[in-house]
Length: 362
Image (tube, rainbow, N blue to C red):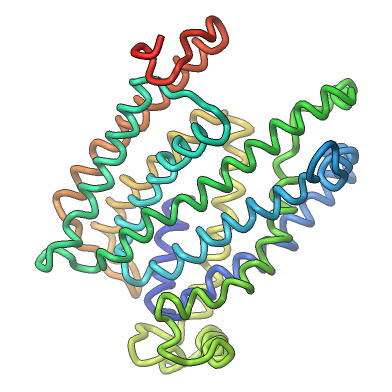
């Protein structure tokens, strides 16, 4: 599903070109009723306790958690929109590769905000991930090997991952707050309390992400998508591109403009299925297996981009350095995850050894 999400996004960028913002707007609009309907069904069936709404909306010594949801949604919105705007200027494999920078940003922010401590082994794993990303985007700086990738947008995608990382950290804070709140109020004693339900969080995030996506429309102007036009005129053209149904609807640089609406719909479907599959994977196989599977998206999608002749997209030219990056990134991620598990064991058994840069910091 992750590969389908990536590939459908790259295909949709071919007819949309400078109107790829519509992908973000469409997914944000679709998430609200879908997540809302699922949450409603879960609440009616009793799978989600009603008292979780009290935790979300009522302040308990400090800001209510709905404020944290708004901040997390803003991070996701910025990350999604900037990624979508960069998509026409970056090849599929590079787009997928740069998403691995999220892990590095999360580690940096977790150290500063959550007080997390990373061992030498964990740091080594993260450095290897960073090296893999740098190797992958290096060919884009060579005029002969740039191909489909603009180096500026490749770097922007790498830095853009910090917004996803901020959202991840905020969500982690909310989950921790809920556990403390549920323990102090005895809400988990009914046997149903296994943490804040993920659909409770995702539904509230979706409620914020849709209006926030509308508010960040000026990013199109900042990234040069409007060609000097006003935002209102640009949005009018964007809707014409999606619903026009003709080859000329999306402009002269568009490829297959008559398929723009279909491509947006296909992407929205795969994006929703991908997000739901992540939730199902976490529930039925655990966070570790899901984490590794998500990181496998880059090497698998690189194979698919390189060897499958996709409609509107064709085959992607992949530099040998990207193949090197694809070969080393999975072992680096697995090693990092193994080191993280070892650090967690030390934190439980002997906290004094779960120090920063262990074993150097014993």
